[in-house]
Image (cartoon, rainbow, N blue to C red; front, side, top):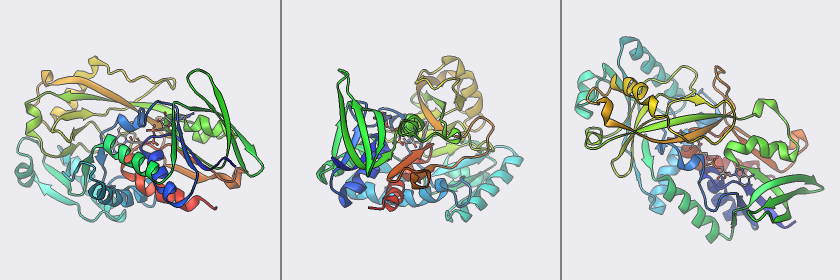
Length: 372
Ligand SMILES: Cc1cc2nc3c(=O)[nH]c(=O)nc-3n(C[C@H](O)[C@H](O)[C@H](O)COP(=O)(O)OP(=O)(O)OC[C@H]3O[C@@H](n4cnc5c(N)ncnc54)[C@H](O)[C@@H]3O)c2cc1C
């Protein structure tokens, strides 16, 4: 075999896996179609270290988020990756929503998040004088991280451990062979290169379903539907009026967790993301300026100081959803595929939020799936 382990995709999850496995195994190889890391979902998100409030009890999303949050804070401290443990408020602006935040507190407790406190209107005003809320759930362990430098750090560790990363190489073929897989790479000049690997880890994000199919694993339940999330920027100086993340209550099936306020490491503030399922799986990162009114209306319920003209279009990301519109919440799919006749093939499909937060816990989970 040319490689012991091949990881497809250098997003935050693929790189987290690479830094872990390159410490434990020789011949770890990462292949990425873009010329550098994190050019897709990993650089188009809210950069929030989630506490793990909403996900169904016992789900991978819940377990890996709670475990990953702690690992991520420790990693950032040890490797000097910029982060801020700024905390978050989930605000109730109606009396019905107070019951919802009480329900979130109970779910979170079952998930091992026991540090949430319900604040009344006066307490909220002390923390965030310019935010309107009848009550709010305060999550002190939520934070933000510089995702680019986090990925850079994962990349550096991988390379220092002796792992190799081949940028500008797209996996275009995977064939099952006697004791592993034959992988075909295509590079921009349409050069083709084939090599063999005992283990293949599919961390291909938005196209992870297609990579799995390439190997011969067809499963309609794992088909990804692109789901866009757009952001608007809150123009200065009003960004200075907010000190922590502020979220509305989430929609019932967690298609998204509501247009929220995300603060950035440099003090900038963006609002979003919304939820738009795309009709076909195209990489559509355009922000529709006509959505400004809807964003303004949505956040002005809890940010009364914002005017329509304080917003400007910012950017968009795409969620790799295996949850179709109207479906109940779907979990991450992380599976070693021996039972389907593909030993040593590990699929990661539907790694939407909280994939960034969970990245180090996902890496540990994948490590335990490797049988060699
Ligand atoms: C709008 C939005 C907001 C979010 N906010 C948060 C948040 O605040 N906190 C949080 O924890 N999570 C958040 N997430 C989720 C988080 O961003 C993702 O879970 C995470 O980035 C997924 O990382 P990944 O490595 O699996 O995928 P990606 O970043 O998509 O990486 C996959 C990589 O695989 C490569 N690839 C694909 N096919 C091939 C191929 N055939 N050959 C070679 N390379 C290939 C791609 O080029 C890409 O670089 C958000 C997501 C979105 C969309």
